[in-house]
Length: 109
Length: 215
Image (cartoon, rainbow over all chains, first blue to last red; front, side):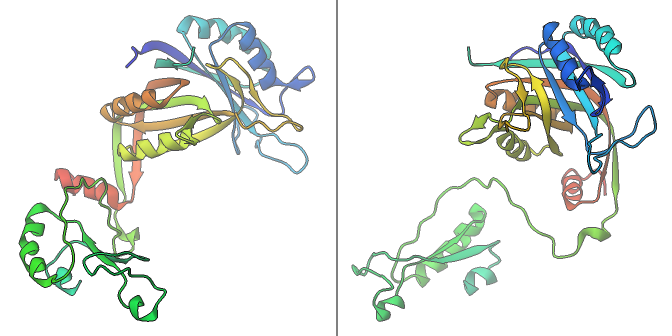
């Protein structure tokens, strides 16, 4: 078994309807993570939720405004480097980090 | 079969084969009506060694014509549906320190021709892990370096997948090791968690009966 490294997980809670320029904010954040050479990012779409604006995020008839959670796992320093960048990009939202142990599996060359 | 049941064998199955031959040196097939009454039959039961040894002499006498075999087996799972509805069971609350395991992989990852996330959930079930949830992401990148994304015109079969599990530290360690062996490229993340588990199931009651701690 590979040794587990200590790392940090960052979760960014935003809305599907949040925009950055013309494209969805979550796409912009993922692209920014890539530029910053963050190891990996996954975006999840929730079914329903509410948050800072106390307005229900759900799928409406014509447009979808569901909650989005962007999950990043990387070393503590990389996550700390990412936080101010993402904070700059989001208008209303929430970021949470927790300490984790990470095992990276990469068997194919 | 009646004899086995009377003897309290935990379960027995009689299966009829489609065709065969044996000590009669006659091909038993359903083609000829007379011989259809004479199709091969197999009665099988699994029980403890003592039980089998207790029954075997009688069976030996009963079977005048045929074959009896005994083999060692490992019982992997022995589940029983309770005859009563389970809603009457009191709800139990378990609280305490636990660990959370998240596995990041791709939807297209395979394990012996089945989706890897399904194989992982099955394995976790075998390891008696309390529960697992599989999430499908809508966008991401990671170990493989390529972007998992889909648009209106392009339906991707390789979206990011996260499997999330919460259980005790020992169970999570076992799960992490098992999953690591199955994963080709991916990431396993373990973190501390505080768990409040509300269960109204027979499974928990059986588990506590076995340890004799909670009732």
